[in-house]
Image 1 (cartoon, one colour):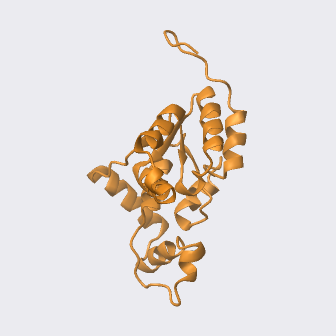
Image 2 (cartoon, rainbow, N blue to C red):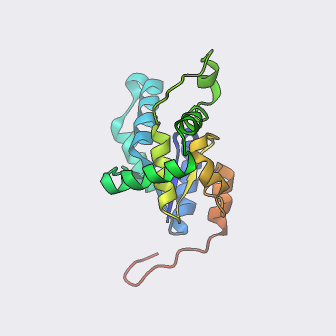
Image 3 (tube, rainbow, N blue to C red):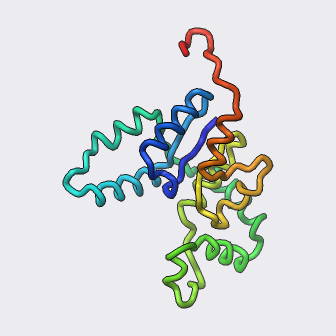
Length: 182
């Protein structure tokens, strides 16, 4: 079982350490997509300037047990996801509206007129990957259309930080398997 972390919630070192400790005690793997790693590392490099340490940044992730994963978009996966999106958004207009609904916050405020055609963002790919693994959850504060299916799932799979902590707390402790120490 995996708990994904989106860029918009990866902010507090202490909170991430506590979350990863709790997840580890429940046998939950904490992961970030390589795109989230890229965004966060760029943000931290800009913020720290010349004080940024690549080794410290990556060491923090290793110490917390956070895995950086990539979504392998091969032919069978692309076909499944295309078919799934087509079922949800059966016309070109529906699909364009769905992509426009991913614009949020300050980004949408910058448009006087919404663009007619928009590219599919990486968030769509991450959301589809989380959907495909029925046991996975993601922590995100993003209310965009790409997360709707996960938000509306039963049980809910797109969680706020507090919802994720509550979910983890409700799981039984991970029992060590034979040959593995606690």
